[in-house]
Length: 524
Ligand code: BEZ
Ligand code: MG
Image (cartoon, protein in one colour):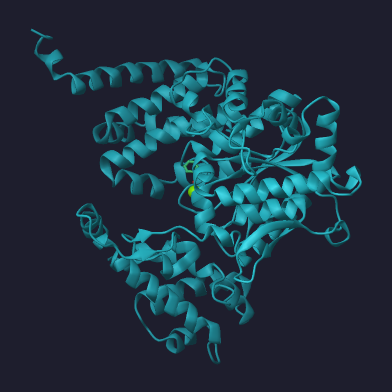
């Protein structure tokens, strides 16, 4: 393989703390490398020691005097092992054919190479997820606790008090890759810790005493994906049990927002058992919140309809024998108390603009708070795939992704080098921006302006897109026009007129492609 194509992966993967090592950047800082020289030193180590195989000692002489830090050798070995694993990835196709023949494929944990390093490689193995009895792992528990503290600190700084309820999205694949960091966040917010049996298996999420917690228990509303629901029944049970325990704890309601909300619901006539439901997903056998589907199909009138779709489709409570019982009053009531919406992003592979599910889940939860409360609860994402966790507001993250990816010539050329499927990915990004604009009101006009200029109004780029994938080019224009028509993107009339003309040209071309008989004078 071309080693230079692995640089970005190595930069990210080697910065993740692993096996007692603090990560490459931290090692360099600890060794006294000046802050403005760290990035360059990191690159020298990756290119010369990992990719070209030079000895750690000789590469270190290019960076500093004295002996190289001991931890550096382990990090360089990890980098070389990642490269060796990548070199074996082309066997993925062989493994697939092998599996289709009903033959044995070597097992491996479900992991991604940034978090897990070489352990995730090569691809093409039979991944076996994680041990559900050990979720969250100790590392995930600690990182989840850090995230919860950062989130509460952010909330306190902006609003002067703790949020009563945090709504949090729980996904299965992220749970597999991070070994349960999002679960760790929920436990920390409520104030709970896993209890283990003699074999280390977790059998309960137990409340930590309020004196130890030192702050109120935050209530948590869990927006659980259908995949998580179908994969981690045990975690659903442990969580439901935790919320029931919090609701009945002998504690003042000023210090226990779970109990406060349950008591308030009971006073309004909601049955007590239903009032403690906090784990919500779709009905058994149903998949998807429904909100991103409506965006995809342009099948919505107004955001009220998107919000009510979320409320209808996701009102099914799980865990502790609830079995997907409908609990719409509890969901609605909880959403009126949500003061912050949160989701960790587990991987650099998929950000907010790379798929429909972030706005279909946490975005839709925020929209529901907007409709039920009149103002939207803040929506914060944690990026948790490197050594350091960062917290960013949805709108800021969308700006960042627009600059770093969607409008970045390197990203664009990378996508276009994949021909049909790369162009399809580009076309889809216009749908996702529309989704974010509609659901969270979180896409600045300049992003749409520059997306229009870069991909559609630029004749050469439009021709490349349309050549690679005419449907993708048409989707790009159609979604821009839809964004304008729905009031999500204010564009001037001249721009809209140009886009309309381009749209009808592309439609003509596309009809020529899908129906070649038209050129021969139509059906005989
Ligand atoms: C999940 O891993 O739970 C998930 C997968 C696809 C879409 C949404 C969530
Ligand atoms: Mg993911």
